[in-house]
Image (cartoon, rainbow, N blue to C red; front, side, top):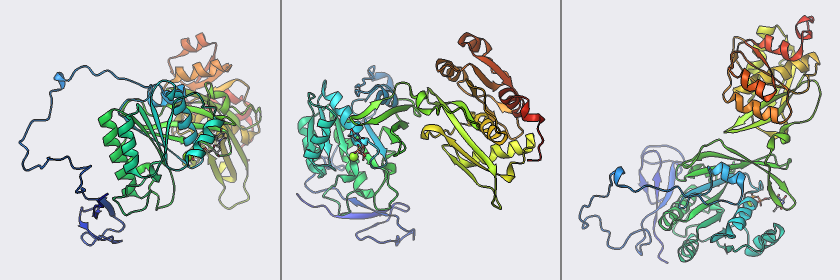
Length: 467
Ligand code: TYD
Ligand code: MG
């Protein structure tokens, strides 16, 4: 195989050198040189006879109207939760990147899905990290036997491309893109240049033969290993697989999807026999505690409502500046809510430490959780227990007003399904008839104090505020 010469291209100014420098000689920016391969002489990347100077100029664009009706085909991945996140299944010829921390279960998920798909289509699983024996062992454990699945344990890009071309599978899985290497580049596997070149070569081939390609990418904090960030603009969909290593459930999200909605959520649980889908994930995020400082909200992930418990602990501080920590919501959001409670309800929270946690390790980013956070904090401060079966929804304005929440009806349906009977929501939500049909008592409030009195009772306001 002829080795091509690499060049280093500055990503800021485009200057090229034959040698690597920490600082670009031309524009002076640091760490901006990235290795790139020049077209090889033996020509995989160079079509024979395609000398740009000698080919006659031909039109290549087509009128949109002349293009035939395009059927949107989808390949079922074998998992309803994965299909949901993909927007209905894998699209032939598309490139999907699945990112996540090492050990979170990416290989397990894709091997299981490959097995399920292998029952109906041709699937190639390329393992660049584990040997064929290791994959087989795992496969046996996952009880994959019975499916037709081709396995290739290989790290050389050229050989992987050859196999893909020979087999022309419907689906190919590359585990992982960081472990592949292109012999034409001198940089180490996993470096920016390698990851980008390997992914681009695979994509060219996959698009040509209409193979759906799934790449596994690791998220690492080390500088040497390029994270999947490098690939985000290249691929059609980016899924992230996340979860608490110490808990068994795993969340799959789409952060980019050219063929479906983003922010859809898929929930799995890691068991002894691999990953299992969780159809009713709300139960996972309910702590079941009837303690002071617990409030229940309904978060929405894409089109999926999740009933989630929040727990707060408020205690007298022994520090000069009180401690505030939040797990599962942004700590700045907590600061803001505490400031609103202090200003508009006169609670002396600046003399108290405040800890907040979302049950089940979920990340709740929505402002719709504000009222729930405020209720949990006040309940803990007052040592009160919120009445069972109540959910709280509302965004909190800096002036203490409650603002509307998107997809309220969807959230209330989920709460009602799980047996909740009361909902505190912002005024003029316009869903009183829908709530009545669900058998929910609807308490509408326009301000934070009003909402908390409704939820926690009058005891809240009548006590001494001296702290
Ligand atoms: P893995 O898929 O290898 O993670 P990744 O490819 O993202 O690095 O999953 C590794 C973890 O999953 C490992 O810690 C063990 C656990 N696991 C189970 O709990 N049950 C199983 O059936 C399997 C296959 C793995
Ligand atoms: Mg793996």
